[in-house]
Length: 332
Image (cartoon, rainbow, N blue to C red; front, side):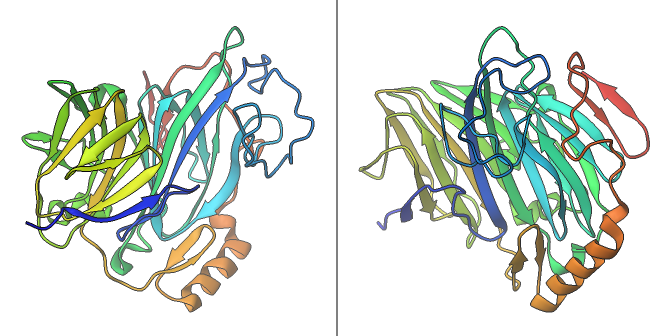
């Protein structure tokens, strides 16, 4: 019988993905305590502020200058799915939508025809370290949906199913695991069509336990990312952390964790199988469409920026919340 493993590769920054996914990045930053203004209570000397991607003292500022994160920037033609396992993310966008989410929450944003948003990481705790653990996944949109109306959706951690099996914990963010369905994705998503079998699962396997990844349909992209632990074994092959494994989608796959709990992310889906033209935050089907996207953004700013600052953060004492473009506010 052939091995279910198609390829094993080292994880970089960002992680390698397969169609229908465009991009996946894992952020793990051990920020110090906050300074009361949601920035780090530590010197920023020696950092390339505005473009700080070097892990120094266990953390990075990214494009932030006083608060870490990603100030206002545009997107068109795809979706961002942001999973915040630890810490918080403050969202603001050109639709007037906003939110603070974390502790396992997920934000699903369809950029569609074009949106600006910011994603800042407020350091709310002034007494102890502010650890941030976050995945951001870019899921492509097919040509027919490149220009849909932008959409902002929160999947609160209270609503995301977490299944406990013997020694295994599975968080079902997208797709279905056995008889358990994830919350509905954004309405125009490739994931909204169930026959595309898009799955995003965060899996934790305790040392000495096994997890059987159930088989799915033929010709799906299926990648498992082993990002934390000591070792796993698949088909008698031992793998160390910081590796990705591309798998055959039509076979059950037994994954065994060795010595420590193994943490994995699964990305699966039917390929869109259309041409991809990418330039920074724009993903279209041709270079001509990329040029038009850039020109349109320069002219319209995709609706402009309604917030006071490009690196806008919400009040320090604000809890988890979402404000939708229609003005609806949900507080958790």
